[in-house]
Amino acid sequence: MKITVCIGSSCHVKGSKSVVDTFKKLIEENNIADKVELGGTFCLGNCRDGVCLDIDGKIFSVTPQSAEEFFISEVLSKAI
Ligand code: FES
Image (cartoon, rainbow, N blue to C red; front, side):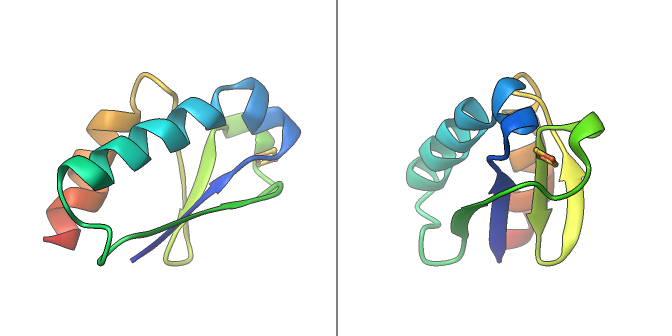
């Protein structure tokens, strides 16, 4: 599974760094670094709904507040 978080300026302002940090922490805690690849990208063209991210070609939007819940439902449940 490949997660690419937008670090374009609009998403950066909305907290993409914090989303990336949350994901990194959860990947480590759950020991799934071998199953989930985390990367960054510039603008995904969906700035209004940032923080945007792409999981295997599908676009989602999260906030720093919803990042953990999102990770559990969209990533963890599918990665293990
Ligand atoms: S800056 Fe993230 S979608 Fe444009």
